[in-house]
Image (cartoon, rainbow over all chains, first blue to last red; front, top):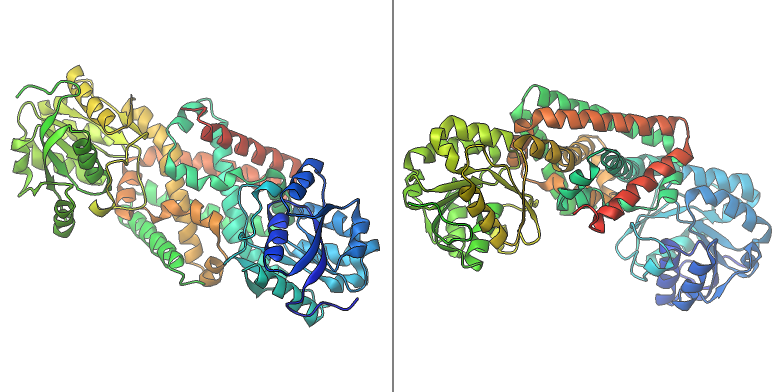
Length: 296
Length: 296
């Protein structure tokens, strides 16, 4: 089977892990008229049945051998499940079949592909749609999830340009803004702006929930707390995997952040009101620039 | 002038600081039919003019002597401005005039009232509507801001019961759920669920903004980051005052949180995936219970 050209239609798509991301990718490709039949593979039978009932997938795969029929395989499992998923798929991948993923960490994806796909790693183009939500499961999927969102591809040196272009075209058809980055840079950037905030939110809620007066404390938590901790409602297994896969970068971010908190602590101890106000004002100004799209 | 009974109408209200909170209180009292004329006093002439144009206030006060005509004075300035505001109002307060405030810290409010109001501190009932927003100014005010929100009153020992009841009735008329607490307990609770998260959000944005690759980092920040840092768009002067006024409790919260982050750091270093997942799952479960209203 020849590799599909950029923008080409995928006649048969296999989605492994039909959750928010996998399901939304299927719906978006369908909405763009870019795919024929979508088959879903996953651990949860009820979720797959629901995905079929919702028209997200057309059939439930009997097993990884379904990859034989596919011209595109999209692996959207928690990142810790990527390597076993690729290993199970490997014997069934046709030479022309393209494979991509949706994992939030990318150094480990490259390593996993090389370990279990061998020469076929050249057909695996790692990607990361930056479009999480604290909701999960097929029922949360929507065709518009990726519209205007960023997707980062972290191609392997052995990926032929047309394979990268085909994955890029699929994401563009979903409405995403696609860019390319090294896996190392990706993991560094995401540790700072995504993985760290998730851990900070989880840690805050966990720390408060563990106190004897937790009920009273939560009783006075308001809108600011709700938004600050929204990402603490994210999927624990998914975030466990992300944290483990990116633990060196995340630990470095925790250290940098801990040092920043120590500086705030010192300003408080000194009662340095002017410096606190400068810090808060600088943060607000930076956030306003970000919201205004100055960093797009 | 006799103290208004609980639920009584306030014929003349003076709002000092006609921002989001002061303006919303005026609008809510008006909507409840609980007040006659509202006069506004503040630093920013343009904001006061806008408040008058929007019907939030009926007139702009020439100065603190406007308190002479008021049966209720609502001080909604940043907490650092409460003591000078009360000091300026003190010579003009009629014996029956009730005074309350909206500050996010309450030990300092009690101290300020006793220092500058003397015996008239008995007419000052400190309060805190927990209804902040990152928006500020009269233009952001709305009659419904306090609907369903908590207002904490931290009465002074010298407040007569009818004074507390009158302020409680005013807030209830605004749709708020009113409760009472000691100033010490209030500052402890709010340090954990409000002041700490604000500082954490400011510190994260500030730390990222200060990096050489800040533009790239912000370029890949998404919805999780946006919600996590929403409170970093809060008013810097207001939060400077809160942090300074509550610095001992806030420092204790920073220490507790720093220790919690150290524990996460240790789990990462050990690659303890199971413990990380348990922590994340416990945090998510606690947050879901909170969202479900189990701590109301």
